[in-house]
Image (cartoon, rainbow, N blue to C red; front, side):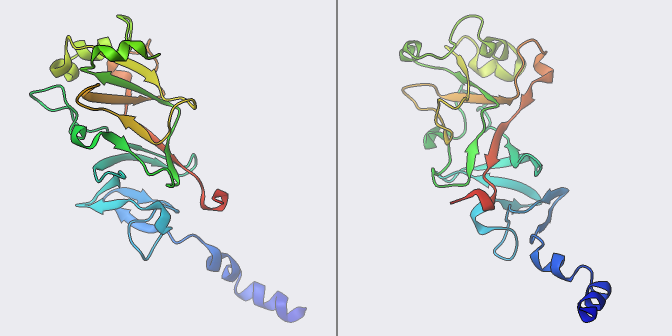
Length: 209
C-alpha cells in the first residue's frame, strides 16, 4: 500500500494523461477540440473536418466544403458558413449538388436552432407548411443589400425543428435555388444582429451505439 501511495505522489498525472483526449493542433487561430479530427493522428476519425490554408472546413456528404466559423465544445456544436449566393443570379453555389447534406450515419446533424430562408422558389412551394407570406423574415433579407440578387423572388422561411430531416437543406432548379441560414434567429432584431450560419451538433463518442 505504501508503494502505491509513493507512486501516486511521484506521478500524480500518470493515470489522467493516459486517458486524456488526443486533441488536434490549432488550424490557424482556431482550436480543434476532441473529438473533432483534422488528421489520422489526432481526434476521433469519425468526426472528420479539414484544415486548409489555416481555415477549418466541413465536408458535406456530396463533396462541398463549408467554412467553419465557430466551434463550441461545451455544447458539442459548430457553425458553418452557408454557401455564397452567386453575384449575378439567385443561386447558391451548392445548387448543382442539391444543397447541404450530411450522411445519415454521421455523428453530425443540423441543430433545431437554425432558421432557414429559401429564395427564388417555384409556386409549388406554396402548398408546403413553410412561411411564404409577406411577413416572412426572408422578405427583409431580400430587400437588404445582401439579398439583392434574390429580390422580388418567391421566398419562404422555416425553423429547422425536430419534425424535419436533420441531415439536409434541400435546393433544386425546380424548387428553390438559393438559401441562407441564421442561428437562434429573432425577428425583432435588426438584420445586422442576425447570427449568420448553419449550426451543426455532434453526438459525443460515448453516446454512439
